[in-house]
Length: 209
Image 1 (cartoon, helix red, strand yellow):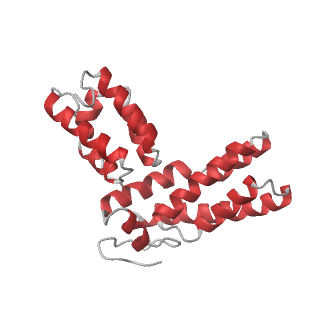
Image 2: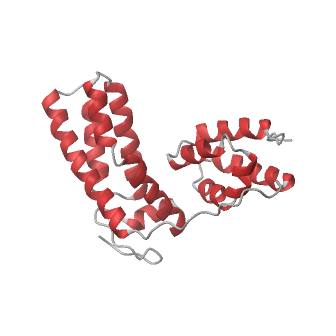
């Protein structure tokens, strides 16, 4: 539980210095992604258990892999090794008893981190809600081109750019913004880029034009 300059929150099981290095020192982005992680991955252990109960070992392995990757990115020093051990056991078709033990350890580490994040992070500020203004087509094309470039380089700054122009992009891409945001939140840059390209084409702002 360590505090670093610019990140004043003490979160058990988190190494913010390591996480912030991967976020290029962007405290706001790091904090936002931690909040997203707590909201979207809190039930990951249950999801894995359900997948195993239905014989979907591949699905369980993918979810453990996702959490392992996010935990490593954020500097979750207790959760990352627990997720990695579970992923390896699932991938290598370990005995059911071994998997159950590792899943229990994973569940405990995940619950501990989520609880710490929810207790230690400040409440999220309400987003701007006015998306009714006319769309600035020139700005839209510029933002889309910058987003596409960042996504193509797997640059976490894409999330910051998306958030800073959320009203514009929500208005331009009412059917796609949430999916693009979700993909970036999960560091799925390929899906985010593909969705952005199709959204831009439908909005008559195709990339590269």
